[in-house]
Length: 450
Image 1 (cartoon, helix red, strand yellow):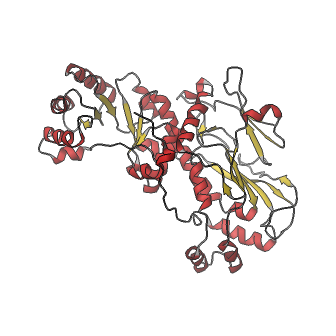
Image 2 (tube, helix red, strand yellow):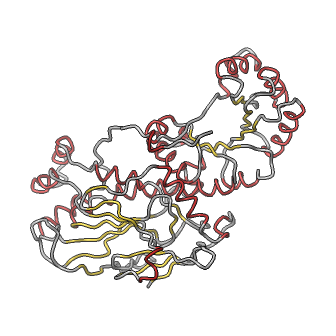
Image 3 (cartoon, helix red, strand yellow):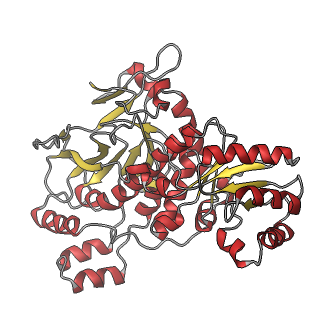
């Protein structure tokens, strides 16, 4: 089957304002900073995580394209301003400032699909304090959700090997989160989704045939299979575990013939049932009929089926919930700012100086705008995640990780979704082999500060 180019398939979708995808304290900070004359100080915020979820060996950057959309649509229209005024969230001077809000700074970050490690500056937002601080919540909500799903998807794709994966978790999460999860899963290695909204918005290939309800609707399983084959063709996938699996497989081949596309198993001991179904299909002459398995799969269940005669997997709940880790615990922290006073909103003047939290309990931060690079050994395998401030060493110039995404308020880093998907595959291939182990362990690369 020819590969689908999602850049050509993406359809224009009206995106509403994202301005209220924020926490109230960001606006109250803005008001106080405008009054004190510090709102227009040049500032640098970074997104990073202090640690990976327990047992994970790498993280996956996902949601970057959605972040760019959110920044472009961060606008305070009349209805939004009226809401803020009615709740007395901020004063009239601040509302006046918000009415003209447009992010005019720069954003750099790890390109979507890249892997990351503890401390990795996956996103750097630069501009005035006022314009940058407002983006904290929307940026984090996107990156934390999408990166968690992409990391789970990546582990599942590793476990599946060459067998394709279908995302089918829409009914297990919020309807809008489902679309984002489908996108993130595609970046992480899934090949299709059952969610038509994701297919419409992002051009992800879609698939789906029937559920148990369709079989139960008919007077017999044979009637259900006949109706489906007559409507969708012999290449369809028939669900064979509504009643007796062996009887259903026999009926399926009788109805569709040996050219039946696939059968789906959604319950029972999948390893045992898959072997029995494969043997039965072969004996009935349906040697090319594929076996699809579903039923609350995660990366461990998929790995356990590696020796089973399974052709593809459908994954729902565990995928859209990050397989036990629904967030990446990314944070958005101020790491540098200028000392100059309010300059009227241009954000110029004054050199940047590092700032950092000195909190207890492991919540301290490292000041300064950081570069990130990933040097490789003679075999092309990554050996460390190297972070530093100041000038990037010349020997690391070719392995720098951050790329420009927004320049002076203009998006320059948009790319087709397939580019992120391909990048993730390449990034994973460049890690030490132990990155693909599902057993608990430490991050596969150490983070080195220079």
